[in-house]
Length: 430
Image (cartoon, rainbow, N blue to C red; front, side, top):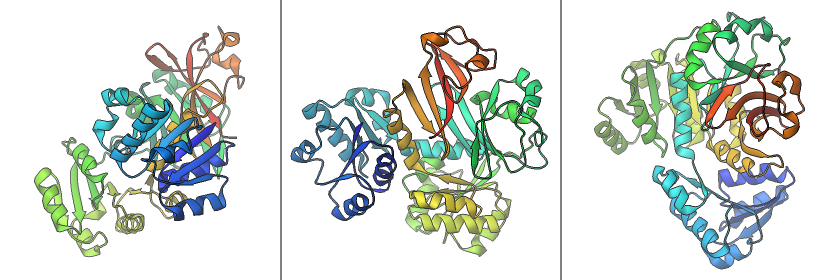
């Protein structure tokens, strides 16, 4: 497919580099020639140096099929999408926005394009860390009520050393599927005879309302999150603090070096403790008992500051650290130095783009790790009436759930598939 990316910032560059490796014809449009030179020099990408608000600029890429509009301005993105729809009759447009109003269903319908609110989705990832403190990450399958929870197995866990088939008694109480195991840098799509070892990262698909019950039944103990530190202000921070304020049993401490920001946050959120100071001030952190914190979240616009703040907080005793990361180069680095949860907004947009590019009958595709994809596909007629255990890998890597109408359920080996069903699968990326 011919894909045009408008905006060569962090997200646009990431998409251009990734998609250029997957045999798609890619163009990237930006007014900044230096950004375009860097991308086009290293990757097979058509660089178009012009302002996409100019009709003559868009004429240069009017023969492309899918448009991904990812400049830093919501208003500019909406305006470009409107021009593409009205003047060039384009109907495959994905728009990055930060304002909730632009991602609401009425506005999406009016615009006639997909809008992706990276801000809200990123904040939701933090909320999952509070709701499910045992999780390394949580991916929600939109509309199905199913989540895929990543968990790092510990020596003391009761599931450690067991075969997946031995968890049958838990599965009789709660529907779940272990969809993948990451071990020593390799990804395994598991079978019943696979063992679970300490250090494995397992990906578990389960209904969202059953997550806590499942992990309790698996014998995995954890402490609820009671104290959260939020470091620094960015466009993500205000929405995060608003969400955290809804947790009545949660203590939240906010630290910023900007006095005006502190005064505003203190006025808007009276139940949040606000402190004016440097994020890496050890004396301030010790005084405010960072060692008792269950989670610290660094959300400034400066990635280096976020990383340093999280490292310091962990060394002072904070149990879990989460850092906002824009550049893909940092993501693997921060996990290797002890930061638990990278918050990577660009991946949320990438998953929407992938969903439009698959050659299969895929309705939605979501990236959950470097090697894994979650896809939705329709059961063909030749599979009608077969059980999941009979299908094997003929249909996809591993069938996780089936949707009929508005209902989705986690499958078992004896689940019967019917032509027209929508199935959710996990596959290894080729």
